[in-house]
Length: 153
Length: 153
DNA sequence: GCTTAATTGCAACTCGTTTGCAACATCGGC
DNA sequence: GCCGATGTTGCAAACGAGTTGCAATTAAGC
Image (tube, rainbow over all chains, first blue to last red; front, side):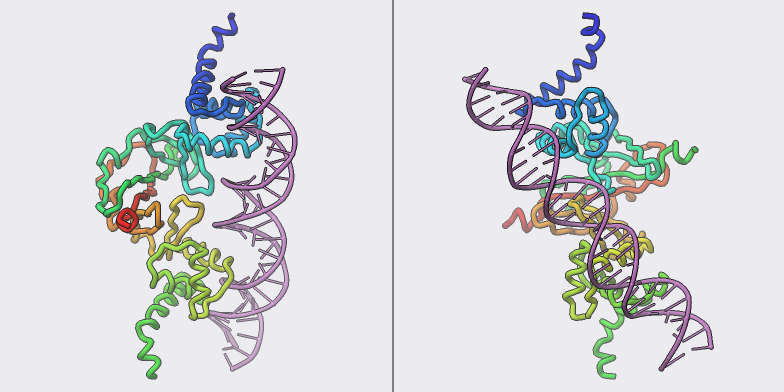
């Protein structure tokens, strides 16, 4: 009983992940729960490899093959459970959130730290969309710079 | 003499490319001239592979190994003779132009056609740069959509 | 519990890109 | 114009991220 109460907030996360999987029509497996838990609890985004390392190291016994990570991430992305980020450094990253979580990042060129920017200047209309005759226009926007920690120290 | 006059405009391009190489402190070689000529005359941007095919097929005798293309492009980019574009499709593209040629693209999701956008809305300040404490901030911005040709036909 | 379809692990593979090394071509000096 | 130092090239082999085929396993519905 004591244990049950103590673990409450963590349990809650697990249930959310399970629900998300069931709602999506996916089987609930250990690797999938581990990936969703990781993305829900640590600030990302993470590369497939980073996810693999963390999931494998976590005592949550989510250990699995890297291929499984790739396959789960692909499924999750297809169902909009997670978003893919591409910072142009040769690998892809993922973070929690569906289409409603649209936002952009600023990445430190030195320490690679990633911050999220709350507002999207394109949807804000603070960016004037060029008139191109294209339809169904989406965009990718990322900022790069030197973060305070790096230029201070 | 007749030949000299006849080939004038084309010769001129070659001279420009040669000058660019000499000014950059690079040796003037056939592959390098062929790459610069291609980028100057055809509307890009092009992947290394596309450049290789075109350069090899051109009777200008610029035939060379794909590795050479990669190495030339890396040098050129380091010297800001060309710009790298990344549309997130697993390969990189290059086009002519230094830092003064900063601009963005809109890419058709169907036919992959790439148009250049004349103005940069970010430098226009029509985008309100988020105050993040980061310094030396640059950005990457690309648009994706369906081009008129694709949704018409 | 038992069946079936989904999921996983392993190994082998693809594709864009990079690297080691020996052969070669360019450029500056004679 | 020839020659040597240095930069550049070709080839083959390696690389890393991501994918695929297939047999073994496991979750979900009955």
